[in-house]
Length: 158
Image (tube, rainbow, N blue to C red; front, side, top):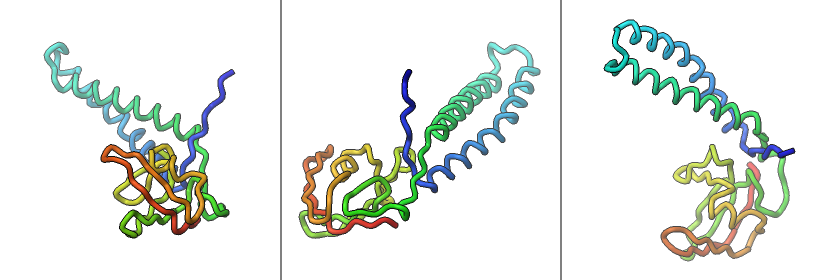
């Protein structure tokens, strides 16, 4: 029997997915109404409104299935409940780059990642390089633009 792989995420990510699911479920009957209305216009082979509504219905159903799957496998983790001296999921890590410039990242789930806001996935090259490391460890990360070197200066659970 296959085991179901848990999907770690923060409460904020879980709440965002839940809200998106609710919004899609509200949109679902509206699309069904649009399909019925377009169907009433006659010949379906040349009815662009019908085809667009059917395509949107397929997108919504696929999104609903995907989100429901993620939520069913969600393992919500609160970083405030964590502690220790190693980088783990949910930790906020401050790094010093080669120029001693500080960069801060929080290790989050795949659905929550947004590098521009300092949230990186535990599966990203940077996330994988940081997991399990301690303060003062040197980290080498291979990214598309080349190898980068960092030193961990602080690990927080906030």
